[in-house]
Image (cartoon, rainbow, N blue to C red; front, side, top):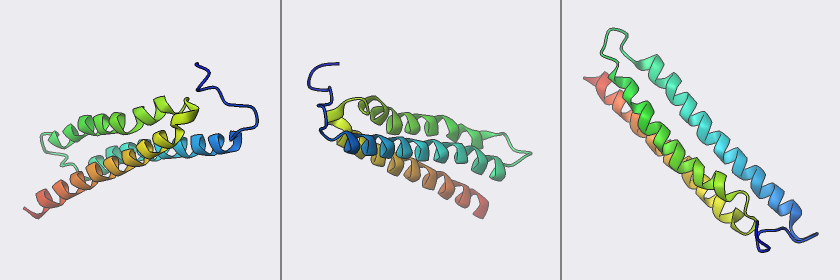
Length: 112
C-alpha cells in the first residue's frame, strides 16, 4: 500500500466506510440478479427440450464478472472509492440489461 492510498488519521473515515458499504451492497445486488437468472431459466425452460436455455448462464457470469470485479478490486484504494461505486452501479445496470434481454428472448419464444 502506498502513502497515497493510506487513510489519513481522522480524514473521511466514516465516508470511506459508507462508500465501501455501498460498494458491497451493489456487488451483492449483482450476485442476486445472477442467482435469480438460474431460477428464472429453471422455471421457464422446456423440460422436454434440448436445454439450450441454460446457455445464457455463461454470458451472465461474464457480465457479473465485468460488473463486479473492477469495483471489488478498487474498493481497497481510498482515493478510488467513488470510481469503484460508479463502476458498481454500472455493473447493476449491465446485469439488469442482460436479464431484461433474457426475459425478452423467453417472451418471444413463448409467443411462437
